Each structure stands twice: as C-alpha cells, then as structure tokens.
Length: 198
Ligand SMILES: Nc1ccn([C@H]2C[C@H](O)[C@@H](COP(=O)(O)O)O2)c(=O)n1
Image 1: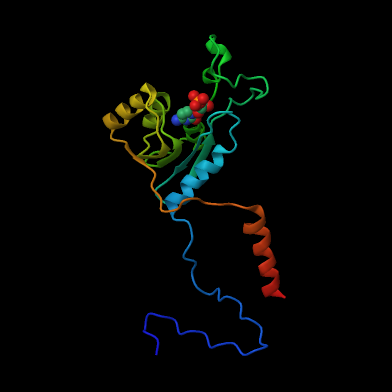
Image 2: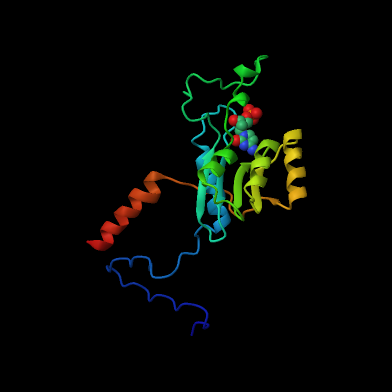
C-alpha cells in the first residue's frame, strides 16, 4: 500500500487503450510567487524603453498586492522619440538624453496617481537621487531593486532612504528566468482546451 501522503499510482494501461490525459484537478505548483511576478512585470515594462543602452522598468504595488502603476524610462509626453537625443557623449548637455528622459520610477509614481503611500516599488535599476526625492515624497515604504551602480547619484538615494526609513533590498529569486512565449503560453494552451472540450 502507498504511504498516506502519496497519491496511489495509476493502474498500468492496457495495450491498445489511449494514454490518459494528465490530471489537471490540482493546484499548479510552479506558479510565480508575488515578488517574482512583480519583478518580471518591471522587466517586461522595461522592454517598452527606447533607450539604446539602458532599459529600466518599475512597478508600484500596494499592501494587497495590487499594481498601482508601472513605468519605464522614456521621453516626456509630446516629445517625438525620433527627434530627441538618445546618446550621452555630447559636450553639450542639451544634446544628451539625460537632460530629457523621465526615469522609470518617476513614470511609475506619476501613473500611480498619488496613491503610492505605504507601497513597495520594484525597479530593475536602483533609483538615483532625483528619483529618491520623489520616492520619499510619495511615502513609499520599500524599494526592491535588481541592479545597482556605484555612482554618487545612487549613493545620494541610499542616504535619503536611510534618513527617511525607507527599506531597500536587492531582489532575490529561486528562478533563473521567466519565459514568455505567445506561442507556447497562449495558442498551445488554447489548443489543449479545444481537445478537452471536443
Ligand atoms: N534608476 C534609474 C536610473 C536610470 N534610469 C534611466 C535614465 C536613462 O534613460 C538610463 C540610464 O542611461 P545610461 O546612463 O546607463 O546610458 O536609465 C532610470 O530610468 N532609472
């Protein structure tokens, strides 16, 4: 007899009988945990960025795990992406992207319509000092980031977070990757549904 915690084995199928479909009556175990889901969303948002060197995405999440806003680094509304500078090596600061790009965190906060108090901010890149000022003003509770840079701007952000009690921590996951395929994840699922339904 099987031990009580194990499902009894399926009886061997008789020759010529069709193979039984995998039972789908139990909860999936390989679903995304919240933090993986939110960081994956931030990375997905970063794919919207037109910045040729660094694409950043950001997601703001409330205590009930509701997404209040997402953002990525891009030019301000009304500025034609094709007319704006995307480099950063020109002597003239007005010919560099940094003079104009709205950071991912800023866009996510703007999109959260003033409701970000007590929320967690997931970002692909650690915030700079300018973003940190706005994060503080919105009373964000916690910042979760993937990548960090050793720059004075990010050091400035760390100083502001420490002074104001905003928790910041590097993202940790057990997953090496989250893959997303229009084909496999949607069309094939739909085909399986058709089979069951027929
Ligand atoms: N926390 C951050 C830091 C930077 N960004 C944006 C600003 C630029 O578009 C890009 C950085 O460009 P790089 O100097 O690496 O060529 O990333 C942001 O959105 N959030």
